[in-house]
Length: 208
Image (tube, rainbow, N blue to C red; front, side):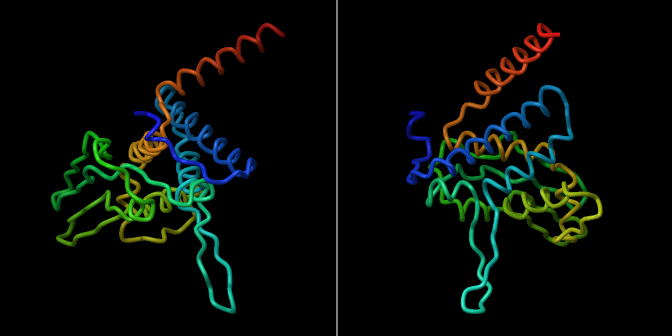
């Protein structure tokens, strides 16, 4: 069953595969450090790694025409990656009440193409009687941009408050959805990573 969940790597480029694995490892460590040790500074790392892995764009010109190239690491490893679809979205009522689903993604349904996955709505707000929606793509990019510093202006000013409100928990939900989609057992990896950290600390103390 787990084998079916794994991405099929179609490139033999060892360097690209190594970069992808490193990015996933950094993401796993960051989620673990936030959840186990409340090191919220690593939320910035989570946002940056999600953008690098899932929605990094490169802009170039072909015959004087500006072209956007999907430079996401996951696309370099697998040209047709698939991830689990959104199960339910976060909703903010016109009264300001927030409804957060227990599970953001539906792991019982077939995985969907990355482009469709990125454009799924995960936030809806009807504050002020005006419907506002934000997709996974917008959420990750907005969060990553904000992590660059408070001076960075929002590219989605009318929706930025939605990102601020629950960014930390939702970023981790997205990361967990990614792990499940590529067949990574986050709990198992966290246990291994924590053991590795403890061993390194013990070795450091022993050498003093």
